[in-house]
Image (cartoon, rainbow, N blue to C red):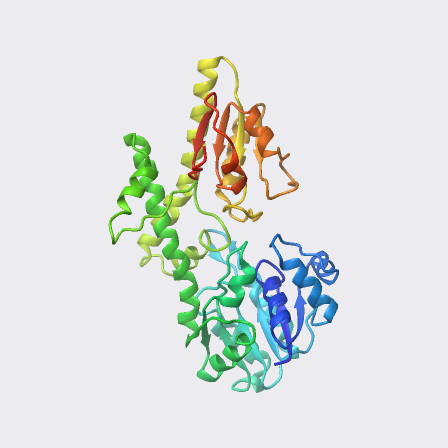
Length: 403
């Protein structure tokens, strides 16, 4: 396994390619249909924000262990890390996985290893195997196939790619062993063998579980608001119980995993996944609830001061201290408020972005000084340095302790 082809150079594929090239004795070919991403990668430029990763990218490009292309070449191992979005009513769209798989079918040979890392519905590896063996029946029983869900956290991918445990689900034990042989070259965590269906479901269940736990906290925050109770104090006290661990409420749930993966379960098992489906509804509703809370606060200010207030919307990312806006509830809330008050002085703040293709961004200190109403949507570290001012209306949906 000297020549590795990783298809999809996004938040998972590109870091995997870089770390595997750095730590493993591999020649890595990163493939993406976006030529701009390919060109940036070959020039040692990171197209995502990830501290310390660009330096390693430049090292691996310079050494010749990593290069990028718009098309795959003949390799020993092929890894699929393309997106799996939705179509229609949260129906999983695996067309990118299928397209990536079809692109390498002519290149496959006996002894090759095929791995899917993309979050996928249960049975995706089986479906890709059918496609491969229909076109290349001579490969049946002669190639290794496995599913290995990624487990990385944006903002900490270098450590997590190298140290997190991995679940390996092969179509047979030999495939699991072959996949472990590959990952062990650059992953220091433990490996747990299982079958493909269990590995595929494992990825979905991990994030559905987190979604359910967050939904409890978010629902609790809505109840406490109506009851006049400080939800953060309540959770702190409840968590003093030795067997209670309530998470912190947020303005919703975003990101490429928690806000998405549960739908892969609810779509295929609609009658059986009642709790998981309800959690998704609760977390989606929390963003709407926050937007309504902001609108009511603006209206009350307008009525009491006889003018429209200036409002600082603090944060666009889906979690603190990153630039990732995928499925971000903060971004949804900002959009909702701007549509309602398009003539108002709405300042949008995201310190992890230099610019945005839709919103004009404001420096967080300037927005803090100017705003009548400050809405904390994301607990970025910069916001925690702001000094309290009594003349401001504060809406804190992410527990900014410093304010």
